[in-house]
Amino acid sequence: MKKLNFFLASILLTTTLMANESFNSEISHFGGGVLLGGALTVVGDYYCPEDRALFGFGVSSVGFAVEELIMTAKHGRFLGNLLDVAAHTAGSALGAMISDKYLLMPVVTQSEANGNYVGVYARIPF
Image (cartoon, rainbow, N blue to C red; front, side):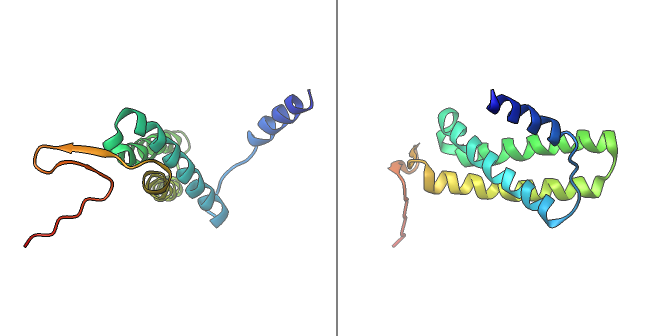
């Protein structure tokens, strides 16, 4: 019961908060982008493993940009929302890269020109 009360109180408090163009606001958008980009990269590993980082970055960035366009249409403040999108997009790129390179297993890629390979591909012409 205490957890439910705490959850409901936190929901009510978050509705009264408002972001601005301060460093703390933008770093929170950056952090959210890192988490969302990384999480969507893990989801992308299930659906399209060869392009999982692009999936995580793209879905996170485009989804947030659409949400900010809706906020701009409702409330204005185009430059502030553009700054939010830039911070989130940079965070999404970092989160997708970290998840792809360091958290998930290497990808087996099949190519007619290069054959099959796992992980690192090095080609040295002589």
